[in-house]
Length: 252
Image 1 (cartoon, one colour):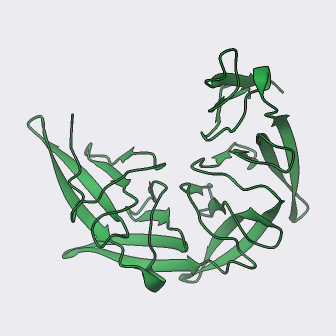
Image 2 (cartoon, helix red, strand yellow; image 1 turned 60 degrees about the vertical axis):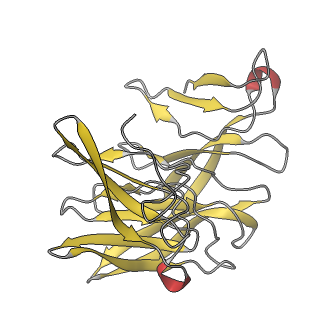
Image 3 (tube, one colour; image 1 turned 135 degrees about the vertical axis):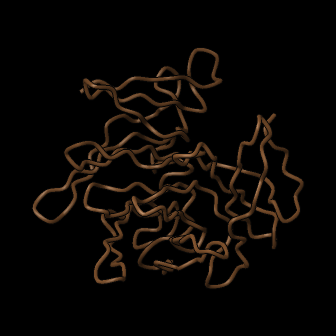
């Protein structure tokens, strides 16, 4: 056991977010509650086999965000990026701690709302993420944030129609800049694994596998990973022989 959260300033209820390491071996993550009851970003530092927790930033609600359910990612300069229920943030280290900048605040009608997964960078420094509800077609969105002159431009790449977008499932970006993910609920039922392909300035949504229950699985919460042969692997929380979930492979 490395650390037990107390529910106070250190946070409570770490949910979907993946953990990451820095170059010194420290661990970074988020909890969805605690601190001011809106959740913090934290760091665990190892010294002689003992781990010490420190709160890097505690969200206070309002414009600066609340409920960081997903994890955080580093850029090459050592800044951290992540999502809250209401937007996308950056944490920059300084001599006195970490400073938060809100890169984008979601408009629930056009952008979607409730990002529960982390972000992913491409080679050009663009960020990709998703929301799991609302937006133009009421089912969440996949979005891109592009840096430009010290600010960030937000663009919805795809709006889900019905059901919900991804829940706790960061997107996967391959070497050809295609995005992959899994959504937990579709209009037909149990969710699906999908690919989003850039094409002539727009993006094409391609369902790869429908999780229709039984041997096909259902409700895939987790991310997908890709091997060297471009096969995709993931998990579903339901379905399978005993209806307790399964691990699956999708072969192109």
